[in-house]
Image 1 (spheres, rainbow, N blue to C red):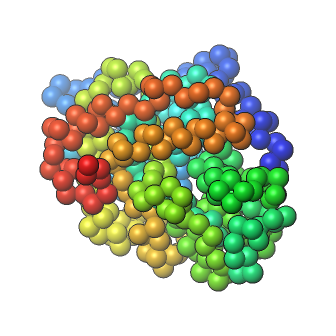
Image 2 (cartoon, helix red, strand yellow):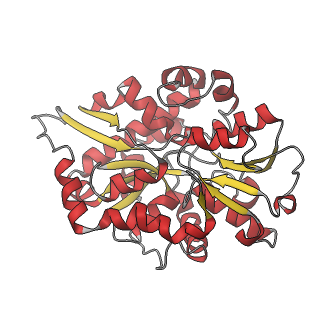
Length: 349
């Protein structure tokens, strides 16, 4: 389904606001899987269901689930079914899941409407790519053209930030909002839109299959290592089971190291089930969106993007200081420095 840019307010009301009504919250909470008591000596029998997206920034979760890395700490991690990107925020905000790997902008939109969770770590960095037809060589060439992406997503905000940098606005283009990664890619490949703002590995396929131009990948305006997906956890879990949350962060660090060390093996473990693309495109996109758990120095970056979301009318309140809580990440790094020291993407200052 296509959503025009004029439906921005309506979209937020449907996907987030409606989900936060007391009656629906009660219903969804009753459907959520109940907590299992931990057996003595560990987290045996405990299952954590994660909501998630579809991009490479989710690979630490997907890889951990497929390789059963959580078992080392006595619990099971499951990548729950998440129909569309916008549903990740709804599942987390309403308590259907306890944790989520989610684009931080979607998390901001849900959080400012009263959702009870915090961002505790990163998951994947960079990888937001704007690809256009061969004849479109600059953002100025996008005037009057159709640009497809996900709404309220980091992929949406990056288009806005690029246009703003070029002295343009959303009035200069026609924004088209689609539901899932495959639909978004296919709309561009079929020529239904002129450009697409997409995540990896789909952005690489969009470029190579059409000989298109990359208008931007975020690094030139955001700097290297900017976050996309983050690990968000509901407040009651942070308060009642902080050690378990820290173990999840440890698992993500272990997954990051293994993915960085052998991306082809990680791709083989996750393709088809999680990534609906060919292996060539998946391998080619490896460097464009690497895993990154330690994003402690990107807190201000996320808050700055919240200002862009206000300008887009996605949120109407300031983001408070509790949205990001890296205290458990700090503890993991202090307690298990070997996990942090061996990964490539990390804060070094």
